[in-house]
Length: 231
Image (tube, rainbow, N blue to C red):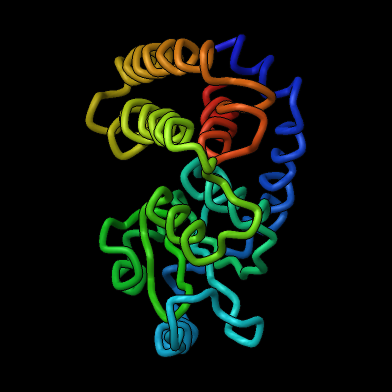
């Protein structure tokens, strides 16, 4: 993992870390179970559907990102939105407060998985960070996060899957609570080490300035938060 950390901070990805620090200042503004969840904003966003498959005009409502400041999955999407320079609003969802705001009935209507992130955009609600990033790539192709080369695109997806399927879910809180207090640290370290060993092997042949070649991609959006949270 040391090789991964060194690679990140030798490149311009160090600047991407600021997206997390900027968001941390807003973490205390999350809604409470004691308050009424503002479904009026949700309904307004859902009713504003786009009229064509092309990217929406600037007059449309800004996307709303349901996010938690410590969530690496949310962080991936914030990085992608910022790299593409897409204005958006944040609704902070505390995964800790009052047993976790993601479990309240109102938020379950937004994300039935009771997780973050969720993104309301173009009259739709999307969940799962990779699905969200692919939607952004397809509807807002400016500042692309997937290479043009087919092989490089596959490599980006490969790295994303290692992180999003083989590392992050296995050391997430929702899994660790079922492992037990005595074993959870050992469990998390095992899967983090195993996953990063695979990532380093892939990067040894794919990396240039960034994870795949010299252009920033979804792979970098996934790698930065995972390395940061694994420290």
